[in-house]
Amino acid sequence: MSLRSIFLCLALLAAPAALAEGEVYPDEAFQLADQHLAAGDYASARAALEKGLRRVPDHANGWVNLGNIMLLDQDWEGARGSFERALQVDPMHYLAMNGLGAASLGLGALDPAVEWFLRAVEARPDYITPLVNLGDIAVLQNEPAAAIRYYALALQVDPFSRKPALALAELHIIAGMHAEAYKYIDPVLVRDPKDLEALELQGRALLGQGLPLRALEPLLEAKHLDPSVVSTQRLVGIACMNTEQWGCAEDAFRAAITLQPGDPQLHLELGQLYRTGGQENWDRAQWHFNKTLQLAPAMVDPWFELASLEEDLGKPQDAMAHYRKAIELQPDHCPSLSNLGRLLKLGGDPATAELMLDRCLSSDPGFVLAILNRGWIRADAGMCDGAKADLEPLAQRQDAWGEQAAALLTKCP
Image (tube, rainbow, N blue to C red; front, side, top):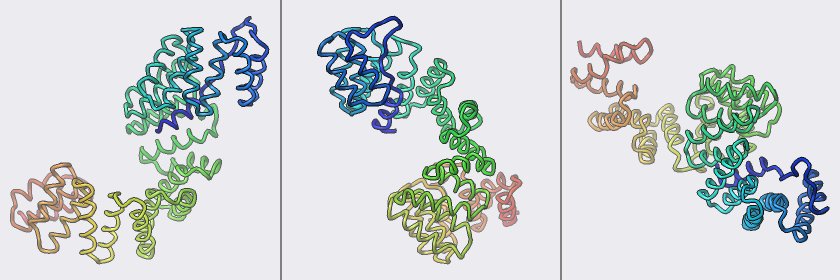
């Protein structure tokens, strides 16, 4: 999340400073400004506020509202000055404190922003806006625990607030706590069954739980409501691919690429779909992997996918070159190290092959394919103690890995 995107959130959350019950306008210009603000006519509101403040410079709410308009105009310095004038009049004006936090963000000053938002919370503990802003900043700073704390406090202030609820859902999904995410998503969808962001988060949570067929229902609903959202189209493609609905997946990925043609991840995933879809689609898969590399040459996955496809095409030397490129970019990339090790063994270089596999297992001791390949090398070389150490635990598994390990162990009776 960028400073700009946080500011947009702040602008959406900002509310004008209003008169307290029984309070009267110190000048008719402020009344006119409030009417313009209510109508969304910010230019006229700004002109009225400036006129009123020239006559009554000690009207704190006027300075706050002028500062809010300056925020929308991205006049950060002007906004900061307006909020500071408000605090000179009323040192406990919590809206001015929140505004100073927003202006500080616009100026790229995170620490002062945090201080002002905290002061706003201290001045008015039931004011939700600075709590949400603090959560957004914690996300930006990659501090999920702090973000969860602030968003949860925001929900305590207003249990029906959409923004902190969906932010908490996303943080739980990122952390792999998919079931926990529903308690934040479901109330939002009860209030608005067509909330696009909530529908997409529900689909992501279901995908994360390995339930792609169920994920399709909210994702297709979100796609129907707004087919121009790239992330929704992409998630529909993933769900369709995971349920082997190839046509649906292709349509969704192609729609996403049409909307955002320069996204390398989308080309990678469409290439993966074509590779899965059978030999007749391999040319298209290769084109999309190469397109991914054209857009993002330092991306590891397309090198790996291209190498795997070249193995399928019977081009082991090309495959090894591309596995090596993936390893150059990410030295501990176990899928590439394992496959390169296997090809080196088949090419008559078991010593180098075992080095590749050892390198993988030093970073990920449980990577099954590397364990299986190393056990195969050792069994073929008559190094049965080492082979058994690798293969006997695998042979206990009730799956294809277990069957392969058991077959290799027959070389070491």
